Length: 298
Image 1: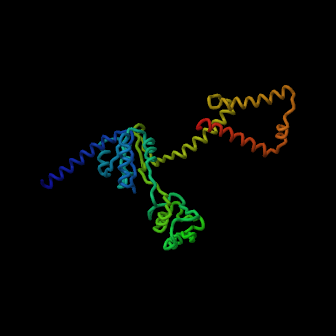
Image 2: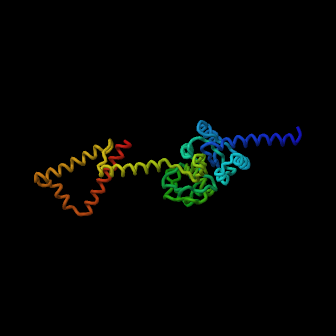
Image 3: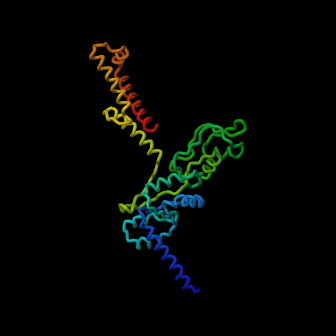
């Protein structure tokens, strides 16, 4: 086989790859994902878990360009700036945000390494450690901690932030975090940009935070429940609270009609300072919200 044959063979392989990519680019979701710092074993595991929903390929940028030209969907060109050496491409018929939610669940804790950027203030709390007296005393002091030997082991005497959020982690700080079992990072596949074939639009900065979303939903449901009760909107969730409120109001109306004197408790309530009344109203609103959450999520 001569050199020309080899060149022809490679060219055929590239053509086949471009053709395959052009077909994959017709999927509903075409996503650029970051695999930077992701161990190979974990990457293969994620690919295996997603194989029924998505296909992931590590592709060189020049092949992506050829595939985009063959596909002729101009909006896909907006993905090109996001294709780098540390990225891969994901193709799926699922919605991009559904895939991003799955990827968010497939992250693993990771230790800090020198040169990484702190995602938040990394703090060492005061208290005992498992470290034995010796060189580690100097290492702890070097990052600003106050070590002391207690009961044969090193203790940290006061809380201390050793790396501020957004700052680069030093070799010393990374070493101390490893010794104290502080694991501030998570590694996994990160969505960088995604093309939605239905609306022909590219989305970037896709962040899926399920805990925050659930907290917002619970808060909104609590407020919604309290408003629904106040407005008398009857459904299976609000009925008991509305009936209880109606019964209380009915008792007040009955006493007024019959001319019965107000209970002592009510009289005392009338004499309460304005600020105390405001606090009572706030507490009632909290109780109604809590009741709503209990019925919805209990």
